[in-house]
Amino acid sequence: MSTFWSIWVTVIVLGTVFGCWWLLLATRKSQVSDSETERTTGHSFDGIEEYDNPLPKWWFYLYVATCIFALGYLALYPGLGNFKGLLGWTAVNQWEAEVASADEKYGEIYAQYGQTPVIELAKDEDALKIGQRLFANNCAVCHGSAARGQVGFPNLTDDDWLWGGTPDAILETLRNGRMGNMPAKGVMPNMNAAQVDQVVNHVLSFSGREKDAAAAEAGEAVFAQACAACHGADGKGMQALGAPNLTDNIWLYGSNYEWIKETVLHGRQNEMPAQSGRLSSDQIQILAAYVYSLSN
Image 1 (cartoon, rainbow, N blue to C red):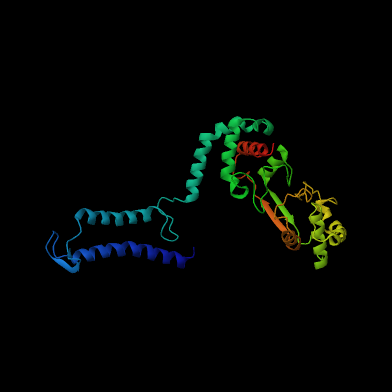
Image 2 (tube, rainbow, N blue to C red):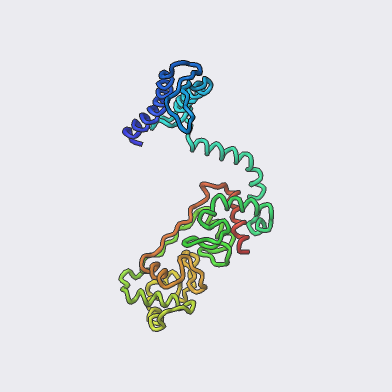
């Protein structure tokens, strides 16, 4: 935060606290007496008049105490622009402390499973329950709570894997993440509009859904030049590159003509973030077993 905005926030916050205090005192000074009287404000509605009595003392002192508490809080914790507070508290510090506490508390439980092979863990109900919670906290935001994925995020419950579904491949994905890159027009940047139509129809023909059979046949040569290096001449993909199988009718970004044309024209970029900096090796082992169990 810049110095200007830091000062601006500080003035507004302190101005609000002291303004509330001044309003309370100014209102109290206008009272004729500290005790109840028969004086009215002059307002009347439906035959009921409003008395001009002072605030109860307990309410007045509670309000004052609230203002004092607010000033004390702002002195101890962040709230005045760039001032970090006398205690030096930050959300990051608190999160790190909570993580350290959780690691100390649950570390032994994770360690019980950390050296067990993924295939064996995938048969352990207790380990899978832990893995399900790890998945919900770390993976569900992209892959969904049921792990069935969504547009741009793969379904983990079927047997279609971009980078491989073996225990070792899943562990590698979780530890180091994955970077997927489908370049626009494949490796043929000079592809014209007619060729785009042909290659899209050819891709659709792998699952028997081409719009134009002649265009699909002509697109075979375009596909071989622009796409086969990654997806293979037969369109069955290449897990070493994360290139999807185009023949199984399972689609990451939609399967109709328009969606595939969008992919060909503009490409796709995907990132699976590495979990090694967020989860311990034992937690990754358990999480890998849970993911493996979803399709096995």
